[in-house]
Length: 301
Image (tube, rainbow, N blue to C red; front, side, top):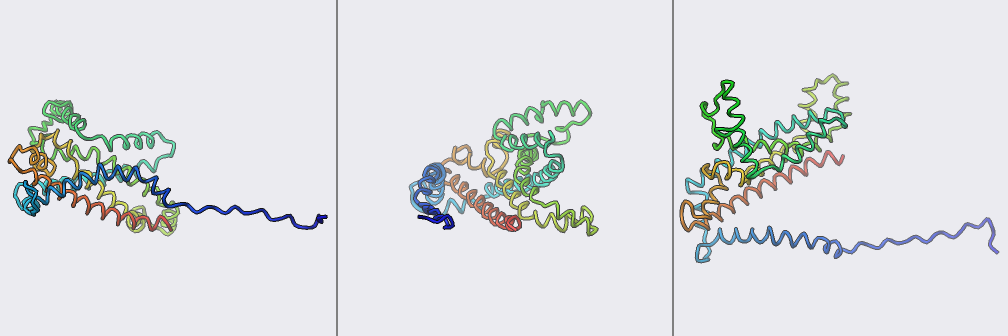
């Protein structure tokens, strides 16, 4: 007979079965096939075409022509310039807008409106965006006619919507909302205790941002700016619809080479230009990953 003082038998612990790696790999199989078909296939087509001539023989002449021909060098210079300028402008205004929104109450309508609008406008590009700016700032656009009625003639001052300046203004329209989306998590990660400690030690708001907030945010700011740069560098439909391909950009040069609008039998050079763009975007992504790794160090502390 079991005594009442005896301890009850210990419950049998269930041993958790180790996860099987093949199940995780099986779950990633559809995504891997998607990447292989829609990313790996076109990438192989671009690289193989860039490194071969019309007969299929291996050659580096296309790559050399894509970086030495004057028209292609001008296209790269224009693309790099407009991407850098719009990335910097979008980064600066996006950070200020995100910080202004975060200083408001969490339940304020301003925060909800800006967050929703940023999610929509960051991906509002292509032909609809070009037509919207033509309707607003074209030679007979609504904003152009309104400013002309109050004494400001944009086109008399030399502005044109189908110029590099007009294209940059169009790019900024989606660069600022994208920066708001990218930088908001980093700004939210700034602990209020840091600012309180700085204020208790007599630091001004500028001193706090200069010596504490900005050094902490620097990797995240740099990574987000690189994303904006790559976003503008790879934009195609907006520039083509807004300027009809008249501005020397890499994307316009690729379209002209593949369609034979300027020179015939330049399809392989167009693929070489596409390969050059892949290299630039690859460098941008590597820089972004490095900066993101540095930005995640202080978050984990």
